[in-house]
Length: 490
Image (cartoon, rainbow, N blue to C red; front, side, top):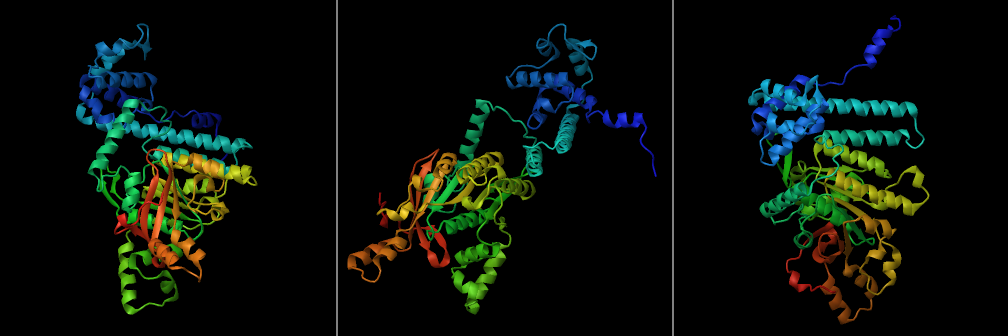
């Protein structure tokens, strides 16, 4: 059995220097100073904070500012950014920058040095996160239980995995404008000319421009209106259209459709799959469950299931999870398999943190705020389903309005888009009963197989109504063959 470590060994273990490569930093900076074009080989992934030595960060940052402004970054121009009495490694700043240029690496090796510097910076960040985890776990602060610490660590690790996005801070207006132009160019090139992900429903996409990244989209409706059916239809449409291409850096970029994550808190994954395969094959889900199908129907089911095997639609059927658990699982899915659209069915089945339990309004506020923050963090649209209050049923016009949202304050406030599903056929059939007049039957006939998706709020676009075709037997929403036949009732 080994005895205790000598004191000097303990000190050596605790005094280790964070991983870095000062020579690689010097060689890269020298290459940039000698040939300014070198900067563009590394600037898309290497930031000043990735340099370990503070003066190197400053040299890289000032050189970048000059080069991006169309000026020359040389020992003469760079030394003006440092005070005359500034010292770097026992030399004046001007002498040090001249030494960098004299020891410059070949431009051919510059990108390799840049990646080495970046990788070491990631390792230092991992060490920092690990140290924080250990220190917090030892201190055991009352306001951070173990579950919250795990969530915080996973968030920081996710940010680190996502190309070192930690602590982004402010973004310049110029960068924001560039991103806007790129979005417009992508919309121009994409099928249907949509800036967001196509839902697969023509009229809805026309009003929304597709499902926009970082948007929290609340989809609400009374029971039997078909909100879950609409969500599953959109989920499958997006996943089925998925196309990707590999980028020069080896990452995979979605070019159409998307990878979909579906949190089904009410239905099992099998029930969800039954709905989707019923919609795709036009075989009643009740017949599928009972096995009341012909040989031809079975062949259709088998063929459809083969096609659907490769569709990137991932279902989490865990009931009663907290918003913190949902966030952690969504981050994990994004990191491991990619994620372009997240669906939550439904808000009222999520739970908040223990501090808000017992106060449902505060709990819903925590949930919707968390979903909106997650949509921004992952840069994906989130469709969150929600119940409506019973006050809808007491009105003559049963089309929902924003105040019908349960705990409507926080849901309406945090949502970028609020959609209501409404089917007049359901209410007319209930009201008419057995003693129907010809006028009643004509009204019912006009509403048959028709659904409305009412856009009651859209932060970046118009409100309005999309008219859809609905086949209840197959839980299927689709485009109307003749939308002009159904004038907007408003």
